[in-house]
Image (cartoon, rainbow, N blue to C red; front, side, top):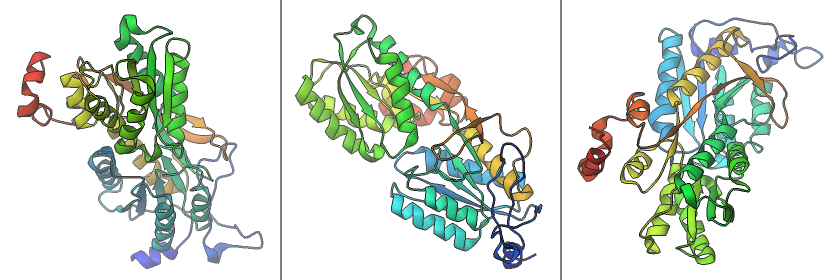
Length: 374
């Protein structure tokens, strides 16, 4: 069956169950008086999965997510499944246009990691109306999504907050001043990270300055930290909560530029190579290790299941979540780990994120040797 014929065949339909396991769509030719009449149809391995990722500044998306999802789709479809991929480069308007592109290409299912979780809702509905179910990936987009997988984002924030208090040790008092570098307000995960961190930090330390960092950009975190240093004093900052590694790097650069010789403990997330290397040298205290392979493989399973069967296969989802617009969305939540210099071998190296050689380059060899990373 050629691509055009296959695309025109039939769109997916929703199963009439207590909890909907797939977004519902209908092909134009199947609509009746109610405008949404369709019949359940199973497809073979010859499917096309659309993948929309939010940005390419964070190394994970191009290094892990996209290639792992593509490989898993191929594995699950005996090499016949295809991937259509676009990256929004942190531009919500561009991502909206990319959804339209995927609809025009008539992909069978769409994996969406939203730039702006609220702004994307109309695009999700448009895709559903075109018979294309949408699986929310990493960020819980609003609109009629069919399934969702991510990490326990509130737990991420708690893990970061607990690690920061541990690193501060005796300096973790109510009078100790810390700076919080949160993520972008357009990312629903950022609020969950922040809420999780506040649940641990509030009442234990003084949050002297707090920022919601535009677009998660390291340069914006750098500028925010410069402002915090001016307001609080370079020697008065006892700790830095940074929601991810990129912003941790921007914050650390600002602290060093201000002449801070003994850096306060700084948190992070994503286990980026630069972040891991800063952990080795002691510039950054920790990161949050998240198994992107597990998350990416899970979303591929969800997408292929929905594309081939019109619904999510039983046993894939392990729970449900509610978004601002939907209730009981089938979900899989992947656990997280606090990454410090003590467990680098058991996390990023063991999972194949990086080799020892990639981490311990000539510049970092002495620091690696010092912590026994050989």
